[in-house]
Image 1: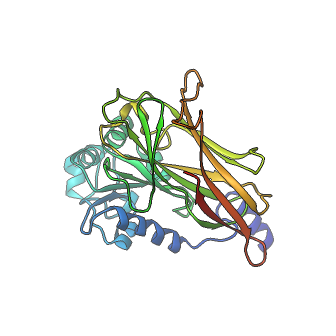
Image 2: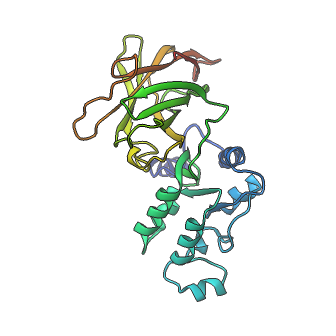
Image 3: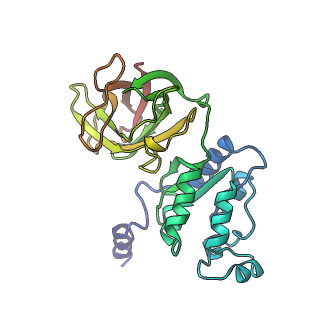
Length: 304
């Protein structure tokens, strides 16, 4: 009977293998917030434990986590019982906070004024970080930040043009101990070229290549998981654009390459890359087996 119950739990995705500590995931997300939000800053979130762990303030009315959300209530009712409706949520988003942190579960529950709520989120903030498997149902946590104008110290600095109006200002390749089949996260930092025309929308492709340059994994999306297309970028803004590649389950140790590029989503024509044709070989990952051989330690080496 226990075996049957365990299989049911695995089948419905209620656990992961190898098992992960939910406490560790929350602590890692809180550390990310501490790095990007100033002390005493304010985070709008339904995950009260995240704000507490990060040592950040929350707007009034969110204290009961997702149970605080009463979209059909009048504002008078919501204020009386210290919860929020869509009007109050929209007001908090539009007045501005230091970060917005919502799980996919939270976002799916928003209803009534979804268009206005997401227009406020995507118009005033940028999806900068995703934390996989954040809640008990393994939904990602999305961390949105106000537009940034500075490249973080952790980034490798670049100055690579894609077409006439887009600049790759830097990237974070990551250096992680990973099991085959797990995701590798790469962050790209884009900027509109100063003095150029407004960038047109372009799709980013990120490929993991083997030594023969065969594509083993890839992801195509407009920046910020499609939420901040290039036509919305502001002058001087630095856009953090995360991409997650799942390593092949049978991935052997060895050297691997990351190539990136951009293309027109209408014509599929790639944008020219300064001095590099229509793609950029960004980094090499040297992946060696760890003790026991069940994980590979992938260390990134910049190629540009």
